[in-house]
Figure 1: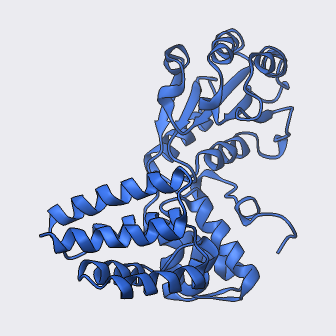
Figure 2: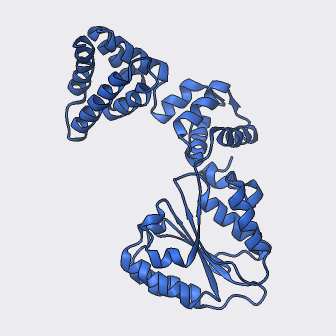
Figure 3: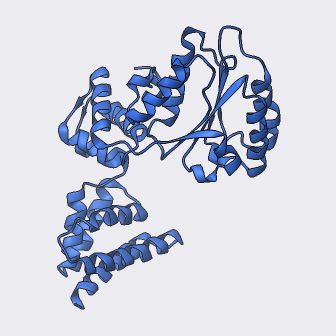
Length: 324
């Protein structure tokens, strides 16, 4: 294990074939790499966090340049959330784009991560740079929301929309890393990592690394403690107890849960919300429970006392069922 180096970077796939993502996207990008006519367009990679957009871009650069890959010479990676003003586009980005590439490479690549955080004037400046220096440089804009990219830029790019990773893909990746790091990952621990990551492979890898610093045997309990989550069965027990009208018991179970896992009030509300729709109750009751949770989540966000608000939440659930 490398000190202070997140496993997300340590085990980042080096070629497109190893990227866990849509086969159609990878196949199309490989065609761009094989094309010798410099016909590769500017690209936009759009999709939610942790599904492989940046990894795909870097793997593409590595396959395109091979041993000639050199930061600031053949490619440049910038994060637009840090450098998103118009001055950066007019100076740093423009200087890189207008410089001619080396004789033995077709063009340079500029990777602009978090491009949807760029200001509108900066995007307008980037538009001019893209069209003026296309012969020297291709740009890959990476964003979570492509609608935040101005239409003139979108029209100059081919947009690839990355869908969320399925649980089986994340499981395979996590099992592979656990084997490399010689970590004993139990089946329930693996399922817990997938559950708390919610389709974000980067988050899943970070949870695995965090759990690995605690124990070389990772089970469900360790994962939930590291992730600040609660086992679903404990949340369901509190909900069912409140719905059955046992207020004192539900409050006791809630207090025991807070002491054991050290969760904040808003975390508790979010955990309850995730389990509401799996309860064996009527649809009307699920709707009412959702409304109640929204109300108390807002109260907590406005600074309400957690203990009072959580107990009031359970009381309202008890009253809701009792009034029917």
